[in-house]
Structure formats: C-alpha cells, structure tokens
Length: 428
Image (cartoon, rainbow, N blue to C red):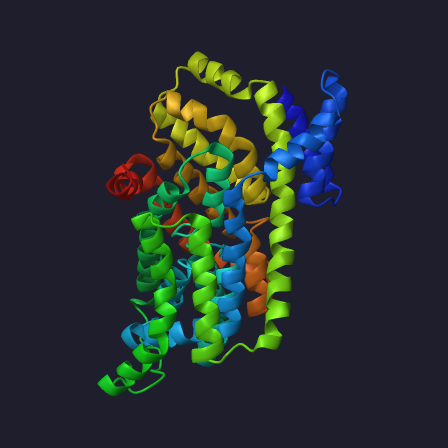
C-alpha cells in the first residue's frame, strides 16, 4: 500500500509537469505526513544518506570523461578506423556506428553521452552517402543503448551504491551482454541490406598505408577503454581511481598529442559535466528517502509473501521482472525505476536462488532498452533532434532493433553464465 501511494503521487506530479526529482521528493514528504508516525527530520537524514557513498564520485568523473572525449574528436578518429574494416560492406556505416558505440561504451558509461558523440558524427556521414534518415537515426539510437552495459556503467555504479554489490562484478557482468547487443544489432543491419543492390560508397582508399595512418591516429583513443577494463579486471585500483586515470589520460592526449582541446576550453567542459552530474546526484539523494520508507514498511518482505502466495519460481519471477521494467522504461525515466525497485526486489531474487549480479545486470538491460521505447524514450528524443526527423517515424523504424535487444535480454535472463562467468572468473 505504501509503494502504491508513493507512486500514485509521483505519477500525478510528473503528469502536472514536475521534474522527476521534484515529484519523487514531494511524494516522499507527503507520504511521511500522511503516515504520521515518522518525523520530518528523517527527510534530511535520508537525503544525506542517499549520497553518502564514496563510489558515487565515479559518476561525475565518467561523465567528465565522456565530455572530454566528445570535445577531443576521439569519436571521428574511431569511426574512421572502424570504417576501414566494414565500410565496404552493404550498410557499412551502420556497422561503423555499432562498433564505435561499443568502443565508446568503455569510456563514458552513459547512453546519452554516447548517442550525442556518435550520432553527431555518423548521421551527417550517413546522410551524405544516401542512407535513409530514419534508418540512420534508428541504428544510432539503438547502438547507444550499449553504452551503460559494457563497463564502465553509470547505472551499475548506482546499483552497487544502493545495494552493496561489487561494482567491479557488475561491470564485468555487462561485458558479454553488451557485445551480444552489438552483434544482434549488426544482424538487423545485415537483414536490412541483404537484398539491396546499393553498397555504401567507400570513404577512402583501402591500402596498408592508409590503415597504418588510421591506426596511428586512433591507437591512443582505443587505449582509454582498455584502461577501464584492465583496471576493473586486475582490481589494482578502485572504480573511482579508474575514472580519475581515464580522465587524466584523455586530457593528456587531447592537450598534448591531438591538440584538439585547449586549456581555455576546460572550464566549459567541466561546467557542462558538473551540471549533468548534479541532476543525477539530486535523484540519488531523493531516492535515499524512498529507501528509508521501503525499509520501514518492509516492502521486500511484503513482495516475498505475495510471491509465496502465488507459488512463483525464479523463472516466472524473472519474466515478471522483465515485463515490469520494460513497461516502466516505456513510461518513466530509467534511474528512478532502478533506484526505487531494485533494493526491494533484490532480496526476493536472492531468496529465490537468483545470483544478485545476474539480477542487477538484467535490471539495467531492461531499463536501458526503455531509452528507445516510446512514449518516453530519452534516446529517441535526442536522436530525432540530431537527425531532424519526426518522433513517430523514428519510433516505428527502430522496432526491429528493439526486438533484437529484447532477444539479448531474454537470452541473458535464462542463461545466467553469460552474465556471471566473467565476474566469477576474476573475482573470488
């Protein structure tokens, strides 16, 4: 009952145009006033507890890394390098978009950041080569979903911070599903172009000399995600320290090697990253209040009692969770759904014998797919602006890509080793 009241008030306020963090905060305070047995002092303490976690420092740092990457022109260098290998295929630039998103996923951990960086480069190139604008927008939007799945991942930092799960394990748990998402999207491109006679026009001469030049220009950019992945696997640095190292590395190559960023640009870059980070941290503080209410009302025990009464096994539970979070992703922003429901559902999943790392990765994949599902798909709105096409046309065109990503979700849901193998291999 408590959760229903909270959600009803929150949805009502969102419907009236309140921002999500304001709607959550007001609904939490209203619930405490209605409940009567809690002091309003818990609001302040809960807000502080929500952000009192050192791991959260990694979030603004990875966001800053994404901003530095965008301004440094790394995206263009990576797209040129990937185009050398797949540019001669039918739909070659679509494959390039997928590959570059997979690589950049290892730097920023944000779908929005990756979409902004890659689509702003790939959409004009695809338009110049005669690609259908709706198709171009759809593959760029769908490929950006990979960003928060392959490590580092801002949503997985969220989950680790609120649940106590190892962020390193969550990172590695998303590695194989992220690669699978890229592969399945590539299959949709292949199916789309298999009967078409038109082949993408090569952008350059395919010679060893040109390959060597491209490799020399992009090698340093490719090293950035390697730093993150090795740091997580080897465990020699914390997630925050990895984020610091990536920022220092990108800053050094941008200032002194590529010379694509000047000292005077840093203030604007840091300011933009700080503004974006602050919106996330506000949400995290507000969710601390929701977590307090959930613990006080023993919501996890109520959910468990309900599942016992329904005689659900772990496979049915996982299917219900998938459907619930996919629907949530269609209607609301991913972050509140994750931060509100994961702490409630994780104890239930563990009692049913589900690996918590597996469960966490599945929840993230669900909600990230929601970024490309109408009516609230954040990536859809961003990509329509970049591609300058109507929202409804993109929403229809992206359906095959959405189906491909849902197939990956289902496979990873019912074959847990795809998620848990790497975490179990490197963390004991």
